[in-house]
Amino acid sequence: MLRTKTCGELRRGDVGLLVTLAGWVDSVRDHSGVLFINLRDRYGVTQVVFLPEIGEECLDLVRSLHPEDVVQVIGLVQLRPDGIVNKKIPTGEIEIKAESIVVLNRTQVVPFQPSAPELPAEETRLKYRYLDLRRPAMQRTLILRHRITKVMRDYFDERGFVEIETPMLGKSTPEGARDYLVPSRIAQGEFYALPQSPQLYKQILMIGGYDRYFQIARCFRDEDLRADRQPEFTQMDLEMSFVGMEDIVEIVSGLVVRLMKDVLGREVRLPIPRMSYDEAMERFGHDAPDLRFGMELVDLTDIAKQVDFRVFREAASMENGKGRVRGINAKKAADKYSRKDIDALSSWVAEQFGAKGLAWFKVDSDGKLTSPIAKNFTDDQLQQIAKRLGAEAGDFLLFSADTYVTTCKVLNGLRRRLAVELKLIDSGEMNFCWIVKFPMFDLDVESGRWVAMHHPFTAPLASDVELLDSDPAKIRAEAYDLVLNGFEVGGGTIRIHDSQIQSKVFDLLGLSNEMAKEQFGFLLEALQFGAPPHGGIALGLDRLVMLFGGLDNIRDCIAFPKTAKAADLMTGAPSPVENKQLEELAIKTLTTNKEKS
Image 1 (cartoon, rainbow, N blue to C red):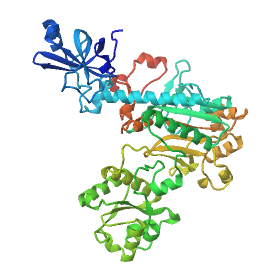
Image 2 (image 1 turned 90 degrees about the vertical axis):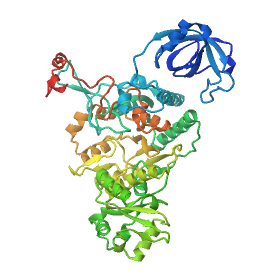
Image 3 (image 1 turned 90 degrees about the horizontal axis):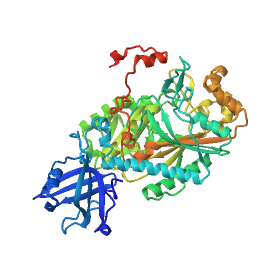
Image 4 (image 1 turned 135 degrees about the vertical axis):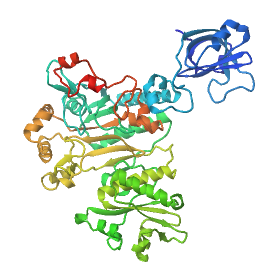
């Protein structure tokens, strides 16, 4: 070994020990001929002192060092002199009195220093990811990720689960996003698909008798990216046989308790709160509500039907009850938003959610609602609105009058934005909840056809099975999502194991027998050979690490992430390939490699 100790483990009790350290030079300082370097590795930082007695040749070598040079130091552990103890680091009471130093590798001038307090642009960090990975914050996050997966594996192993790997090269099946396709050289013109999830394989494992399966699974989806989404991601995947929803919820709730205790040292009381999909949409406008603050949505449609304000009245009077008028109350925020700020909010909801406008009132010191639109309401109507929203002096009321879906999007977006701007969120809080009783189907506006809210193998609630023949819109699914701080961190369902129910679901989705056999034939066949009742869930590991680490970008939780355009700036992927490789695969591209570059 080129070292006997790491740069983060020496303490007062090690004084007098001769040690060998190796790491990266974090900084070099010259104090009147006495030289100091801070030596860094992933475990920490240790100060090394070079006294004049070590010799001018050694001192010249130290003076020539640059940050990120790799060196080895041999020396004695000693206490730092009084007055220069560094209480900010664990090794701050000691230093190494150097006896020798060896340069293991010199660096070129780095585009940024990993230990610098200010972060460079993200593009720079991703291009030089090997430097970014040296940042202490980045290292803490990846160690946190390791810790979370370790706890998961131990938890499921203790409960009789078996970790089984499923294939990376599989069949392309419709799962809601575009597949990444891999051409076959042997079967030219045919393709494998990288898995969007292990969904079909884990159901096969249940049919195969492995009643408790889990996997830390790599998954791929060719979809537009954002701060909490990547083209390749990792999920903790599990499936169980002879279970219902409550069994899955119980096992995962136990995992939450274990993770919070072992990783963050915090307690979570069971049961984790639960609400239905309908309740979440009514109260928060989203099926992954952030419960760390209030500002809940309030319905005012009944009042709006009576007012002279045309925008409210027309929305409230839409046919078939499709229109809604709803509002939120930003407590004590009236003075924090000027007309310019409100105009900016109005433009934002129009651009982001297609809102036609943004109505608002401020509550003055007498409790009266004031706004340019106030003249369109009677005093009684204004009082009703104020009472419904619990309005008090200094409050800021915002409204959306549109279709139900649009009001959900607008007010959920405003609710989240205002909570950040008004500093209503305790960043240290970890608020879990379960969302249950999702609709089984959603109506695609363009095609006018039913689509599965989750996937076509999701079982309906037993009480709603009869509605398959009469009213699909009212069918609720045996589906459940785990939500943390306004993010969905897990989603699962109980699966259909009855072939007759499966056939009815396929019919509603417009899948003919031929299409179903073509896309899912192997699973449909397997279900006929003694399939047990089964269900499962997948937890997004990347997103969990992001939230446990208090971060706001999923790219900081992955060692080698992609940009918003799915590019790897460090390696240059995706990139053109040689024409010979394309010929072997019988592939002809629409543009030449030269044109691509």
